[in-house]
Image 1 (cartoon, rainbow, N blue to C red):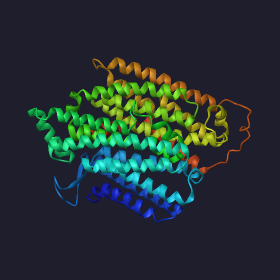
Image 2 (cartoon, rainbow, N blue to C red):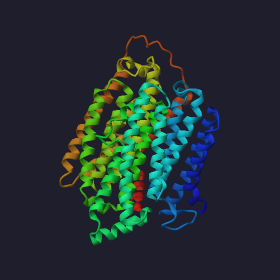
Image 3 (tube, rainbow, N blue to C red):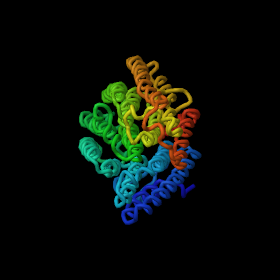
Image 4 (cartoon, helix red, strand yellow):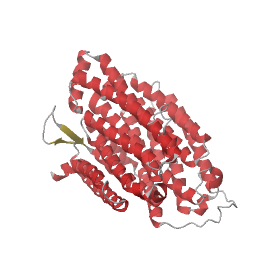
Length: 496
């Protein structure tokens, strides 16, 4: 058991070390190293989850055994271990699902660089999940930003360069706001470790000192991470970034990168400021309003799209709105619903991007809806996968999206001012989701005689296996939600 406590640290060191080693390898060897690395870290994360689940407690790992304020810490409980395990599985499936297209999308001499960026991205996501130090979190936020930007622009066409520029500009704004907030917080508390900051914030709240700087710090940190996670109306960079990058990059960016920033924000709420302080602030109402707005306008933008990948990208704006709406409810069950939706959206959105490329492959590489007519017959596995993902996004029972919407509805019941707008926006968003997702499903299953109808479907066992695994993951989340919700609830309580 004592050895298991080292696994989160091992995961971080391995992922950063693999990024360095991959820079000197060929593309083929870098790909193999990345696959082995992800499998090893998945096993390490499973071992960490076993430790926290069986002991029902959290652990603190002191880097170099130095205590605060000089030392750096990793802190992990049920939720951190489960999130790390889940992220590794989704990343592994996303890479496998888009592996065949990678050689077409980037040049051979840049293939090893692609895996360098993936390993850096993995290390940053793990750090955001595990770290108990705000400055370390900021450093890995920047590493995450650079790696994600590289994954967007590595395809090197006009669209991706423009998308990467937009992404970098918005990310720098978000990072700047986050850094200002952290500086203010450090100035008024004198600490960088999350647990120490929370102790000082509790004292300041009781004495009434520095309340204005504390509020400003909360606003800067919250808005900075909201910008980086593409909360409406800070989402302008998102459609191009997801729509024109490589298949695996789009799946990973949409499902994991923004969730890493959101998970850090949850840690700030509970482990840095204290959820009671956040609940009493007006900031939580701002998140609620922007969340509801994103749910509607993200879906309206998706309806107007004629490109399947951009439609899926705009759908992410709506789904991120769901998560922030749950934060805005200011209740434990609202937070549980948001964390569950992080899992649901990560599993479903990556599945949709992987399925979409299978449909475009048998439609002359066109992403236009008119050319996708009948694609579900030409590529059966991709059609089935896209249909399951669409049903989940709409909220049909048996799939993960249904559980998310049920949890959000339960969370708002009984709330004096937020119940009615939440239920109305949930209903409107569900109808809008059905319009653009079911429209696409009908389109891919509409028989048509066209120049693409006779295109042969080259069976790809690896691609088919990834699609089936994504479907199984989604159904497992939808059919076994009770233990997952219980784990999330216990993990959130460990945060406090």
